Image 1 (tube, rainbow, N blue to C red):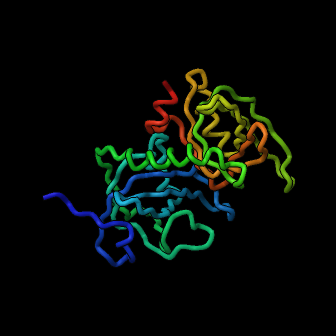
Image 2: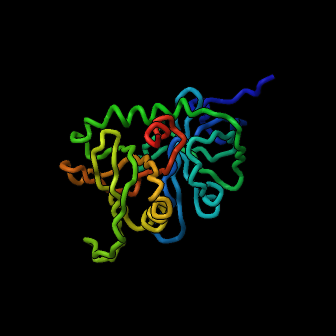
Length: 238
């Protein structure tokens, strides 16, 4: 008999004996907490009905999710800590969020659920012409060049690293994406190693800093993926 899984909307407390099957639709880069006492990482998980949940990881639990190709994989999860959502973290539907701890049981499934994630890239393409009306944007484009990283003085008086990636979309329009701090240390380094192969970038929640020539920049809550297994990415690569 096929195993039954709870939908995300059916999981309402820690006291339930539940097990759910989810697809990873967003994974933000690890960040250092403002208090300086550790790291955290944010995920968006989706069940097979399209419901989503925001999940947080901290410190040593982040290690298990550092694979760049984590996006789109399917997992069974149980014993995540369920708590009320807060105003600062309303990136998923519903009033609850999860914390993945050392007690959380996670098992990867050998399933292809990319049809659900294709909705994400379809949305990006449909929204392309509406970017000028938003303070944020999602993009799907090819990385064709990079500038050297540079150190600047930020508004708060601290020094910060930044680096620009030149992107080309399906309509052969160019745009510049500026990455900061931890994105320079990780994502820019990954891109630099394969820039000659013209990798496809899928990024969400980018700040629109200019509308002519479309200049974008990463924010704390932005996500960044390289060569995700979407059909749209395969078409763009070809």
